[in-house]
Amino acid sequence: MLQNKFKKFIIFLCVLVGILFSLEIGLRFIDPPSLSYYRNIKLLHRFHPDYYVTLGKNIDITIKHYAGLWEGRFTTNSLGFRASDEPNPSSKKIACLGDSLVMGFGVSDKDTFCNLLDGIEINGEKFQTQNLAVDAYGSLGSAKRLEESLTKVDFDTVLFFVSPNDFTVPPGLVEQGVKADDIVEKARENDEDYRRKFQIQFELTRYSYLLQASKLALEQLAIKRHLANKEVLYEWQEAKQPFHYLRSSFYTFPEPKNCNTSSTDVKTKCPETIPTHIQCEVTTPTAKELDPLPEETIYAYNKLLAASKKYGFNLIIVYIPMQNEDIYCNQSKQHSSLYNYVIRSKAFFAERGIESIELLEDSSTICPISDYFIPGDGHLTQKGNLWVKDSLVPKLQKLRSASAF
Image (cartoon, rainbow, N blue to C red; front, side, top):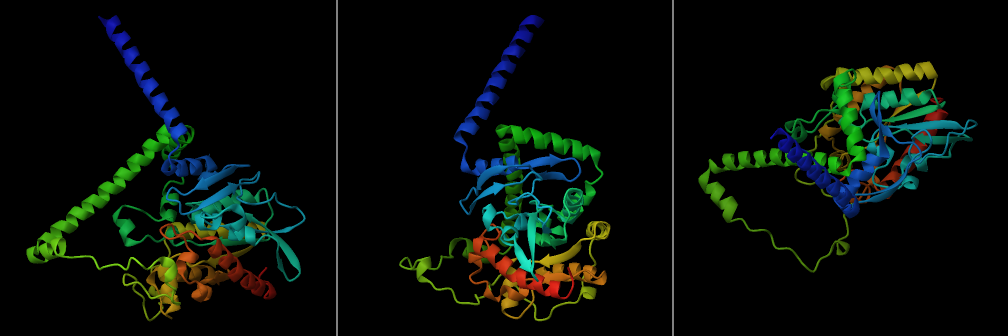
């Protein structure tokens, strides 16, 4: 009896392994666009024992967005820096430090603004750029990435591009339980149990297409469940007003569309009209009127400051307008509360004598915004990367003249 049960278990196990193996091979053969995008991103990265995720060395891979929004070739050098030549010992070097926007998601190697800065000449001196940025990094991840890189390369200047995601999260994402990158990174910094589990799942999903697809499916289900719960709650609130609910649900008709008008027939008016969902403020608050930086962010910033003293490089903080609200409001001579993260961060560094560069003042030329930022994705287009480079160069030259380098 026991022998029969054991045989059945072995048969069941073999069938299960066969099914899983067939699914693995099938997914690799079919390679659907939605999975191929995430698969290639996973292959671009490697696990790092200190800051969890880094870029692989000597990688050459093409990534195409699952919705066709962009496609780009991603290469890394022997140090895992994107779109960078090997460090030249005889050249002064500038490091670009930040997240996916700085790394250059949305374009190929040659079109990232960090790569466009390569060979920049300032007061007769040429600088080689190295792109240290990695997608999804917060301030602490960037600081640790820089500390490690400084043991291998001497940088004269480090441009740290602060992201709003570092220590602020939009209300809608807060409801979904999303936390700022700095808070997440600091919480798991010394969590060995989390590190071990993360490494296991990272390596397994990197080697197995099936496991990665399963992980993505579970994540998508969690998001859809949250959105469904919000929709049910909304309908319940609306149903408390029966007449309004019936009218809005069954007697509201869409406005007729002109089918003879294409997007190419419409000339964008600059500056663009501010969308109704964007609220601008007439006055700009001071740093004292805003919340102080989170302790987790200050912790990371102090690491950057300590590294600049230890290795003797010039630390310059750069703020790129990363949210449409910032640009819309600025073009109408107003202020977006989402830009408050810049005011808070800039005040911290200013108190410590660190120079900052803001590119928002040059955003009047950004029109239409969809030409500079990928709609629905938020990363810079080729034109957007070129704009950052063209806006940044004269400001770096001005700082050089003022002996900031």
